[in-house]
Image (cartoon, rainbow, N blue to C red):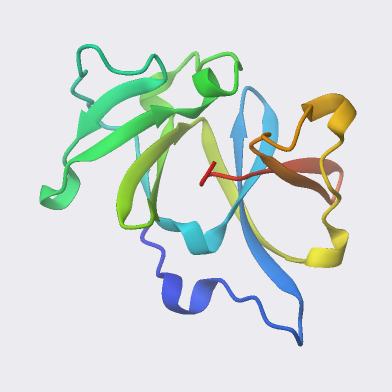
Length: 150
């Protein structure tokens, strides 16, 4: 599934809307701004990198580019997948740096109003250094929106 950024994510004063891609880890729902996602891929073989950060699974090379794989469940202190071969990669680009975030499933895209996003609780997430941007209710689920740039 290839996601084109040019028209997928918009933030305008008229609509005050945000498009989120919903994904899951350990049965919990999370969201990422669609504008940050360049592609979704099924799990593929990763080459481990010695002496790397514990949350880095390694690298892989789709379409000739070396991409670092960050194990997001491990980073978020969540249980890892029981079926890693069914996991997904969310390929992102931040400041011209490509990275793939390993997640368990990619579910859907949602267009929400910024006014529906609630700030993260400092009681739950601590200081302003949290990687949590906020939460939003989608149907009967609460999506935790993650700040991937942090």
